[in-house]
Structures are given as structure tokens and as C-alpha cells.
Image (cartoon, rainbow, N blue to C red; front, side, top):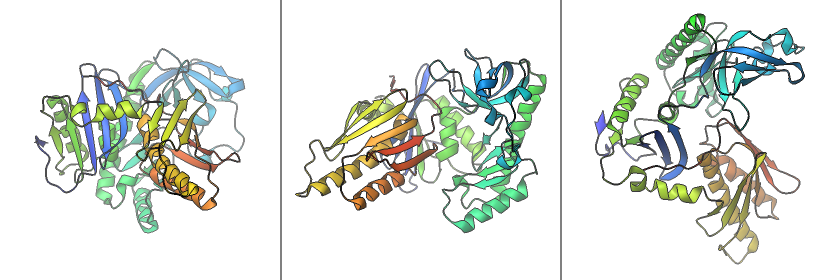
Amino acid sequence: MFLTERKTKGEIMKRMIVHCGVDSIQLALLEEGKLVEYAAERSQKRGLVGSFFKGKVVNVIPGMQAAFVDIGQKKNAFLYIDDLLHPHLEKQPKQKPLITELLKPGHELIVQVVKEGIGNKGARVTTHYSLPGRWLVYMPNAGYVAVSKKIGSEEERLRLKVIGEELRTEEEGLIIRTNAEHAGSEAIQEDLTLLRGRWNTILSKSDTGISPCVLHHDLSMVQRLMRDVYSPETDELIMDSPEQAKEAADFLATMLPGESPNIVKYKKDSPIFDFYGIRQQLEKDFLRKLWLPGGGYLVWDTTEALTVIDVNTGKFTGRDNLEDTVYLTNLEAAREIARLVRLRDTGGIIIVDFIDMNSEEHRAGVLDTLEKSFKGDRTQHHILGWTKLGLLEMTRKRIRNENVVTVSE
């Protein structure tokens, strides 16, 4: 279903704006009017993360407990021994074996990319296979069921776990996703059937393919976002390419049969990113010095080892009480840092130098605000808390290279 104007279906919670250029596709995600994600992908070249390959071991390094695997890319992929053992910790040997006991040069195996190559390093791969669907993540050999911790109701978590245990075979593993909250068992079973079929196709291709070769490409950037966060009742997808809009509608019809997707074909004369203010916002959000709405500012420095964010009061004078002024600036900074980390797709170690606070209550309030502001982030992250030097320390999983703005016409 296509629309030239938005359907009246209540307030739009998320707006996905997609610009389809000559050689690239760019995507911006707005939540409640705020830009929270940006990504770009070459039209003819998708990222490797999530894709499956039939690879060949070219070198085994005992001292690193790792192997290098040729998957047909410019650089060989890196396979660590922990990614070679059984995915269920309870089924791993008590004494970790030497990798030379498990792999030899020339050995062929199916691997899945879990991390893009960065700099001089090749991609990182695993044999802990996972195929994400709308409602669950299918792990063909994991042997357990887990439920997303973001589902707060223990009763609902138990219901979903029971459904997962009833549907899986003994060797299969399932992670029930946050999207599955209140979903029926039939919908979950349909998702499982689809993912099982996809895995069987990968196995069949591996049986006949000559290594190194591609067995399965992950979904495109736009399709992944639709799968993970799109809700037809509250969200809107706006695209400036009729062909891509039709592909998106076909994909949604397969993923959410019976639903009426809210897809808008953008037809105005001005570029789509200009019309929605995306270009201007990106230019501000990727600067080294970033102003906060209240007058404070952030200084954002990224090194190979970590990202350091410095918070300053700037023009914000606040109230008569200095401690309150500092606290309000830090609260605003915490909310903005969570948005910018997600937007820039910053990964690795992140250190935030908030303005010094004397009140433990205020420190706890800033930490709580930061944790709540990160709840919408789908990338695995862990907020460790305050160091002895009064710095805020956190980590975020680095899957792809950090975003660089390349907005095209």
C-alpha cells in the first residue's frame, strides 16, 4: 500500500526517511521528531555483518588461540577459539582445548561475520550462528531459549519462554525479541519456520559451494530497520524512489502479512533530506563541538582506543545555585550523549567527563538519566558507572565502522 500523504493513524512515533541516490542509499530515523539514527550503504555493496560464508582456514595461531579464515574478502577473517566452541556455555568442555586440536590449515567451515573489518584488521567471524527475524533470533545449534530482558513483565517473559520451548527442537536455540511482547504463538511459529528454511538453504549451498563463497547475505540496511523497529500502526516510512518503495512494501507484506504499511512516496521538488531538515541536523551533530539546547556544549574526541566526551556549561548560567546549574547541564548532556552515540554509531570504550558534582544524589540522577536515555539503543551497551576520578565509563559494541556523514544530493 502506497500513500502520497500520511494516513491518519494517530501520532507518528517513528519516521524513517530514506534517500535513494545513484550509488548509495541513506537512511535517517526520527523518534518523536528527534534524529536518532543515520546510516549509509552503497547500492551495490552491503555490509558483511550477519552474512554467512563457506571459508577455508589458511593459518592457525596457537599463541593467540585463533585462526585466520579466507572468506573471499581482501583480508582474511579472524576466528577466535571461543567463537568455535559450542554456543551454550554449559555444553563447552571444562578445559578449553587448543585451537590446533580443532582446526588445521585447509579445513573448510561455515562462518558468520559478527564484526566488520576495521583499519588493517579483517572481519571477525563466528560459528555461533544466528538468524534474526521479526519476533525471534534463531540459533540452529545453541540448545536454549532466552527472552529479551527489555520485556519487563515476568509473566509475559515466562509465557514467551514456554512458547519457545514448545516450538524448538532439542539442538535449536531461540532468543525471543522485545518485539514479540504480546505476540501470539502462531506469529512466532511462522517466524521460526521462515528462519529454519533460511538455515537449511545455507546448509544446502555449503554442500555444493566451493570455498571461499557467500552462502547468505544479511538484509539490506532499510530492511533491517523495518524488521527491527517498524510498527505499521505508529510508524511512517518515507522514500524518494518509487521502485525502492515498492520493494519495501513487498518486504513488509511478507514480514507482516495482513497489515497495512504506512509507506509514503516522496514527490516534492526539494531533496528529501533538505525538506525534513536531516542534512542541517547531521552537519551539526557530527561536529567536534556540539551545543546543547540550554547553552552548554560537548567536545567529542575519538581515538583508536576510545571516545572521550567533555561536558561544559558554556553559555548556560542557569539558576543562582551553581550546583543546580551544573546538575541541569549534566542532565541535558546525558540525554544528548545517548542520542549522539546512537546516531554516530560510536562503539568501544566511551568516557564522559561530566561537570564535577558535589551531590551524590545529583550524580545518581545523571547516571539514571543516561541509562533511561539509552533504552532505545538496539546495540549492546553497558554503563559501568563512575570511576574514582569522577568520569563516567561505558562500553558499546563495535560492529561497524563509526558513522561518517556523506549526505548526497
